[in-house]
Image (cartoon, rainbow, N blue to C red; front, side, top):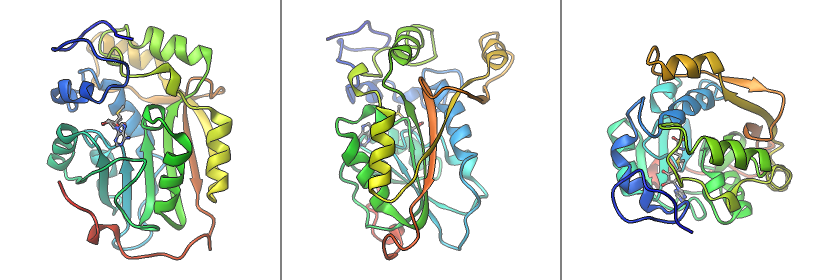
Length: 258
Ligand SMILES: C[S@@+](CC[C@H](N)C(=O)[O-])C[C@H]1O[C@@H](n2cnc3c(N)ncnc32)[C@H](O)[C@@H]1O
């Protein structure tokens, strides 16, 4: 399947990693093609408490250009970002993220290295959800926190997040999502529980007055607000049960920097 182009180069399939290379210069443009990722990164960072110990580590799976970085500043974490896109990692590193090239389905970091694992807008891009969840949970220390946001595998989500958002200029790049990979919420909760994380979820959406002001050029960012339904875009948060696994050495010592 191919899609209409809004970037240079021949048509590519949905969720093709090449998209991120073609749109590499968009990461840090607040009114660019990844604008909504900025809003989501801010909302995700709000779920992260200040670090509870010196040397705490936050592993950002599928970190992209490192958009969480400014929102984590001052919270006391070493911010490690894992991504397979070289250009995205270069942007992340330029914003202070310790950038690690790798696949979120086989993360090159040790068990229990993370106080927090963030999986923002990544689970709906992977071919193997159970594997991605297992990796995220494997990285957590006992008591560590998993925060995530993703898109639900529902007809409403396909209509809004793909059918509409990918056609509104600058909302989401055309073809960034493969409808086949949207996330089954029950499966996500089940896989998290299987690995010791009881996930709590809530639906979110961009504030409508915020979007109107953003479209009108009156503001560069839009707050995300909670909604009753998790049927489109949702956040998840849960801690790895204490005693689930022994802590190991800091990830920083084992990360392979880009
Ligand atoms: C939609 S972007 C989200 C980026 C970032 N989490 C954010 O919210 O700003 C998805 C990112 O996941 C990366 N990605 C997709 N599949 C991946 C995989 N299997 N392993 C590592 N990175 C992956 C892409 O390169 C891209 O940077």
